Image 1 (cartoon, helix red, strand yellow):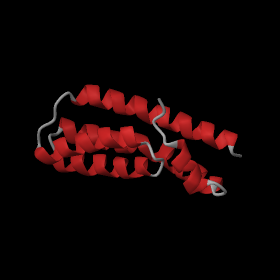
Image 2 (cartoon, helix red, strand yellow):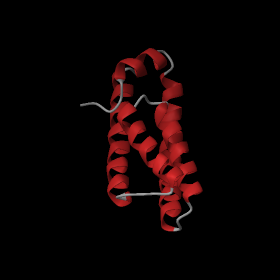
Image 3 (cartoon, helix red, strand yellow):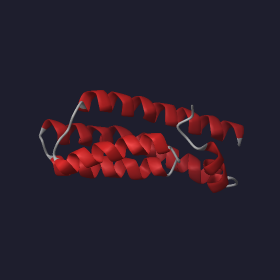
Image 4 (cartoon, helix red, strand yellow):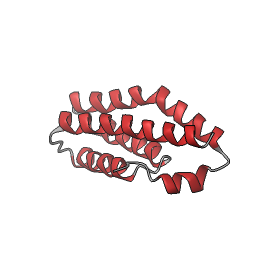
Length: 114
């Protein structure tokens, strides 16, 4: 099952692949910092940092129409808001894997539509 809604991605970026390439590159450049901020928020129990960094990542992921990943981030964001984090490392492992899958799917889309 695909993480990215390719049909919606195509509707929104058809003919604007350069913009999508730029968004992807910007995300690749920033993703490690965003993930580290989430980890830092968890480690230091700075729930505001965790919530804010997760919200930021969720917003960026929304650009690529990866709804399943967006929902996982929304769940983690809500846990940060409630100051009750469960299975953080497991969730981060799944999120990290999903991010890589999302990037592969968008890269594949770009190769097919270049």
